[in-house]
Image (cartoon, rainbow, N blue to C red; front, top):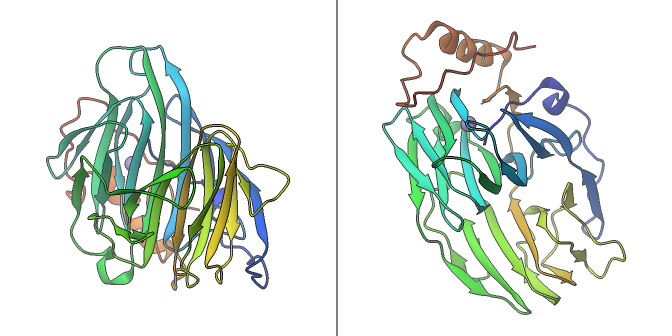
Length: 311
Ligand code: MN
């Protein structure tokens, strides 16, 4: 589950104005396609191109894939970002240019660091039909690591904690409610799966972070608001908050993202995160030429061609 990003998603644009920590901004996701599958793209958004270092969020499914190969994403490159893959249902197999071959199931984390360059492919495990439900996120790498080596981590189990209310948090990245994930983290950011049961749960937030709530299943009221937030929406919370009340009427799953506002202006195009158009063009040229920057993945699927551009 992966990219690409177009200039419509990711063009630099005006900010959203002065942040008010009390305001919750609800933004519609954009429908996009990844391979044969439709996704709800919650990030990037004009006005909120990043939330902390989180720069991309595709919510996939729940869907039943009936065609052979219908969940496959062939080999494609990345630079300057980490991919964070998290499933609620189904199973995918990840193969990358570091030699990794790793199945992933619900509750497990695949975290791939692209650095100067990596390529990977993802396909469903076994024959169809495949149930699939998940989210793929990208984290922009800071200058300190973005030109460094590629890496891949699989975490078969992540720390979880019961919260102050009928809910359980699983910490993918960073520290939340006193629990710290073992996953690599190059910037000050956090990613948490919240499994909410009926009732209200108040969760602690780091006031130095901005946050986003992406609803994966069910519906959630935020701070007692009358209109619950549903799948296909991202709620943005400006820095300055120390907690958030989440109210669910039925079983609800949300992804809570947070982080210190990313200090650098990034440029995103296709599967790349960089700082300049030249860096994007260089990466695209390397992928087209097969010049050795991106190594083979071990997948038998055909490589995905870079689109024209970058623009
Ligand atoms: Mn990818």
